[in-house]
Length: 305
Image (cartoon, rainbow, N blue to C red; front, side, top):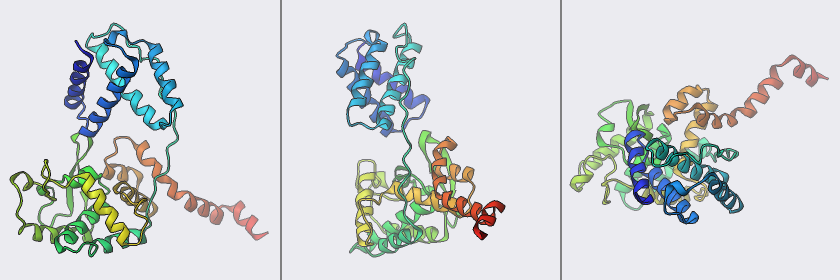
């Protein structure tokens, strides 16, 4: 069997068994093809542990970040575990290869005042009323729920119904979660739904909250990125630093800073592992320091001296 055929079978298995997103599958396919082209081998059984070591050394000497190297290695380890399970190879050459360590960067965040400016700007940044109404609903939803940009733009129309305080989100691995809506987000969505009723749209767009003239029928990620950049610029913010993910970070950080439980934030964000959510605890460092300095007996006594 050709390597490309084996890769396709592997990706289909990931989609069926583990519900990987299309973006993840595209990244995996790119990584796998690059590896075999770099190694210039025609058969998977010709790959040995030394090939991995050589490949890792080349990647480490390039400008690729450790995070990207880790992702590339993860895709390869997944493939070779699958190949061994399917009896395509007699031994898994990746089993002893360790993932590189990398430092988790703290996320960029916006202040509450900056998010407020962004939302106000969304209401008047465009010259067309319909776009302003839609954009306001998009940003209100993003900040009120912290959902991922792909989850936001592809929201089904039936994910928001009537005066419900909740929105149904289908996240990674097709896992569904209910996320509460703020009053301002509910109003923005209600305004958009009223305007949306009068819109003319294609058949494949009618089932989405934010229909668009695209192949899939809804506003795509790239379109929303451009919309957000324009709104950020209109708000007087550095639009290079403003992205959907930054607003998602702001949602989590602002909740945590105001006393929300980390496990609740994990559930709202759709994180499968609490370690992914713990990165937001950096916002509490100053609060922890002030708490100790103001309340610890030794700290109080030292301040009095």
